[in-house]
Length: 296
Image 1 (cartoon, rainbow, N blue to C red):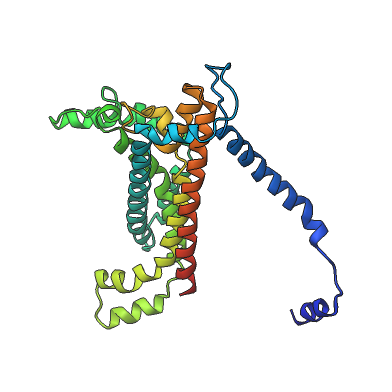
Image 2 (image 1 turned 45 degrees about the vertical axis):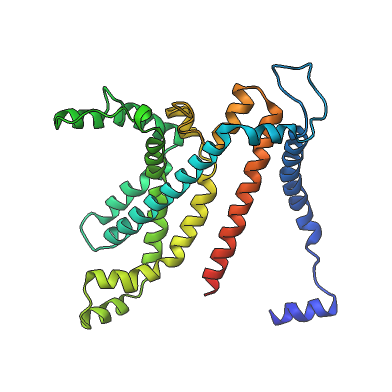
């Protein structure tokens, strides 16, 4: 370190900027070109159903998008989806990590089964839940309800957004479990034993030692999951198709519907720019919050 600093002060050493330049330029082009094209189309009249209507649209696409009553519903559904999945995955992940950290027989196999759903593709997991578990006729939940004499729930029609939340949470709980379990491995066991000798029971150990130790890991889970949950799409397309009505339509699915079902490329580009702005606001807030947490 000292030699490197002295060399830098004397102006000697290898200049690595030319070596980094190709990758930096490629990354900038990779990011800037799609963003520039989205901005360009968002200010154009470009609807595949009306190819005779072209030209500069100004803010008409944005005005049409903001006046769409489905936009507020889509943003609300997106917030409900993200917050619900985060709450479920963090709570269940913490409980699962604490249980799997106990020295019991078959712990390695149990960890493997608990983490496995994270490696299932979203479309596959959505099909499994839709056809094998939540189907109102042949599904496992319907069979259990009939066996107990309870009414059968048509999940995709009666509780569409809750169904999507359950499916997405099932996929992301293993991720939270993996991060939290890894963090739990670094917990000082001597501190636990000392607290037990002082008379602390299981609940007090969890509240005053285990949970504070997992705080940083929980913030990392929240940040990473939030970024990916804002773009959940495949599960909605496979299960509820955004319905009934717009009951399970989120912002990404609204953009897809505008672009590929309504063929309105200009309107979809305006929606894409709105999504970029919202995602960056959330990202800046999360990064600042986590940075302060890690500094503490």
